[in-house]
Image (cartoon, rainbow, N blue to C red; front, top):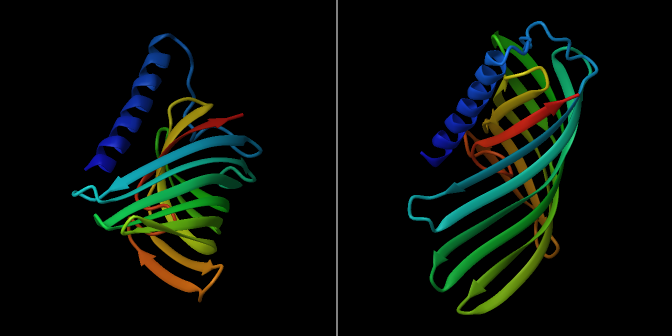
Length: 207
């Protein structure tokens, strides 16, 4: 429910700004008629999920930069952070911290007006550590992680230079290679697939 409210609020904000800009007499072009080829984009995404009990939480921040190489295809890279806290019991708390580099490619399709849908494929690589607190004693371990993720999204351009977007999980393969121990491979489908679970909402600036 928190994720749905957050996404709805962001799209409502974009719609309100669009209406204000039109009301002031400024011309706002539909992205269906805007030439995106060659434009750069700066984006910032953030996400947060938690269980109903609040004992498992994940949070992310992911700024990125990209460029449209055609009118409907963009490439770029994201750089960010993701963390989690899992309180399995009062005596056992598991925390993770990961710093990410994530090259990506996107394909866009027009829906109506300034609304577009896109598909994104990315190859995230991360470096991090996790800490287990067991009976008051901390145990720390470092790891590297890498994978492949496929995610659809919605992008609403409320002016020729600004848009608000939401990305949803679809499919992900992820490998975690601890400094000591064997590599662990996971495959996920659905909303919470990927290194960064849940819905990611962000604002994008084009220039």
